[in-house]
Image (cartoon, rainbow, N blue to C red; front, side, top):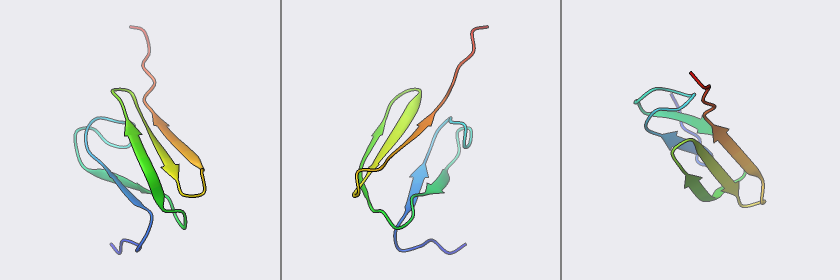
Length: 61
């Protein structure tokens, strides 16, 4: 798999993308300025001030 020169964000751990394994998603043509993560969500702030959020939603059991 070719990784573009900009835009690959790699994650590790349990999320809706993958469970306790390395995974990735892309933010294309907008370099990442800041990555913020917590126990249930991650946020990416890009150079153009776009804001992307990955969030795990838990149900009451």
